[in-house]
Image 1 (tube, rainbow, N blue to C red):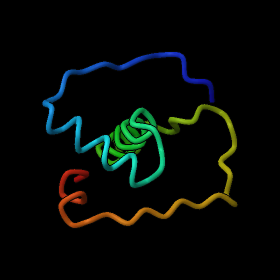
Image 2: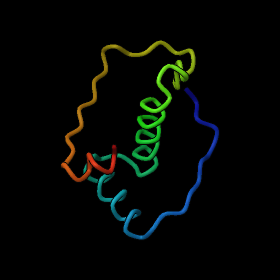
Image 3: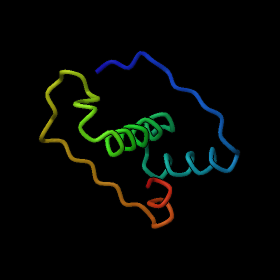
Image 4: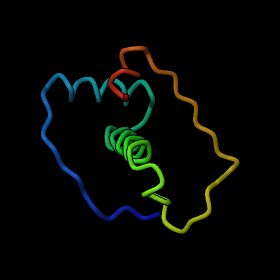
Length: 78
């Protein structure tokens, strides 16, 4: 899926630093981390309203991603 739209928002310095450190720990960009978090929130809150955020591409059932979160990070994600 080709991303061609932007979402922008302002955050506190502390939140920016938290996003930077979490992205560095996961070895991904800040943008990718925010995209993943946004997608997770949209999927969990929208339920069946969003059929697929990926478009018409078939999901790669072979791919796996495991993420370990500190309890504090999990609370932020919730």
